[in-house]
Structure formats: structure tokens, C-alpha cells
Amino acid sequence: MKKVWQAAWLLKAITFIGLTTLSDDDTSSNVQRLCYKAKYTIREALLKSLNMCDKGLMTTAVYVYPTWVCDAVKALKAPGCTIPVASMPTGFPAGQTHLKTVLEEIILAVENGVTEIDVVINRTLVQTDQREALCDEICQFHKACGESHLKVILATGELGFLTHVYKASMIAMMAGSDFIKISTGKETVNATFPVAIVMLRAIRDFFWKTGNKVGFKPAGGIRSDKDSLACLSLVKEELGDEWLMPELFRIGASTLVSDIKRQIYHHVTGR
Image (tube, rainbow, N blue to C red):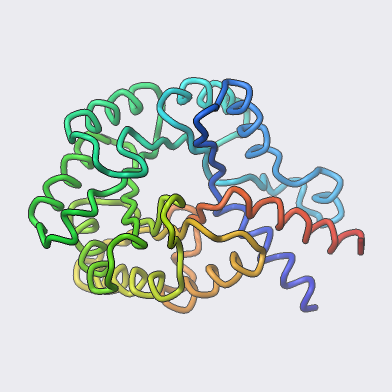
């Protein structure tokens, strides 16, 4: 029974994972392969063994640099495929690019078919307690996104203190962010449980005060099936089952998919 329970939660975890390619040497072929992997994450034979063939099991998004947005949108155009394309505009991962440049690239990405934008904040604004400047910057990101969802990356490993994490989380949500995300995956310290708890409780506080639900995305350093199950359990305990849906919870960990696939294979075959 324990193995069945674990397999069920691992399959559920796949529906929260966004696949990413953010390499300096990305090509159109790389992007197309990533999109294929997003649509057909688990082999059909394994899904048949689990009676999951008709469940439309696929990852929740594909993340690419703005240069490859059109290729990703084209590759994901298929009957029954609802995977959105997300992009990181200029400024990722440092957050030090001129604001005007970032806004122009967000607008261009949206025009090319992106439905989700991940923008990293300028950490200096948090460390120097420039709250109004940070709020104004995120408000402009939100406006530039239009109908597309905005996910604000806090890069918590570079904020220094958990109090900074809480303040940045609240400012991002007040400024209109649809999601708050832990890390770019490029910092020395990425997702940690203390940071995750602080951000989840900020989301809960914000919901209690405003009635607005904001999504949560742990990212960076989540590589094993156990890590994914721990993330799901944490969200379930802190925010409840209503947050366990792709509209409110994501996992940023492309390498995690390989480990989950191995565990599913072992569950089905015993090998």
C-alpha cells in the first residue's frame, strides 16, 4: 500500500513540474526535444500498467529564454496539449538589467505567445529596504504582462535574512504577483525548507488579509523524488489541499523528472 501511495503522489508531482532549458548554447532542436518530453513525460507502457493512459499526464509548463519562445509555442501546438510556455526576460538571473529593457522584453514575449513570465527581483532593493521602489518595479512587471501570469523570483539565497524573505514575499504579492518563487537555481543557496515555510506563511497571511490566493514555486536544488514529496507535503500542511493544483503550486526542477521516472519504472517492473 505504501508503494502505491508513493507512486500516486509521484505521478501527481509531475503535473506540477515545469521543464526548463536556459543554456547559453540552446538551439531550436533542444527546445523541440524539451517540448516533446513535456508532452510525453512517462512512457505509454508504464502509464497503461498504472491505468493512467487517459488522464492526460504531462508537465505543467515549458520555460525558455525569450529568443526561443516562438519555437516552443509552435512545438506545443497539438490537439489536447494545454502546456503553457513561460519565459524569463532579460535580467535573469542577476536582476541588474535596466528596468526599461526588462519591460520591453516582457511585452515582446507576451506578443509571441508566452502566457507566463518569471522575473527576478533586484535584490539590492530588499537589502537596502527600498520597499516602495521594489513594489513599483513589480507593479510595472505586472502591467507589462497583461493577461499573462507573473511569477516573481525572490532569489532568497541572496537576501540574507528570513525577515527579508517575508518582506519581499509580501511586497511581491501586494504588487500583483500571481506566484512567488524561491530561487533562480543559479544562486549558491537555493530552495531550503526554512525559506519555504516563511514564504508559505506569508502567502497564508496575505490570503487571510485580502482573500486573494497567490501561488508558490520552490525551485533550485530539488532533485530527488523524496524532495518532491516533501514539497507537496509542506504545501498541503501549510496551505491545504486547495493549493495542490498547477494554478497555485509549481516545482521548478527539470532534473527531478528523471528521478521520478526511475521510481515509477521500479514501481511497475520491480527493476
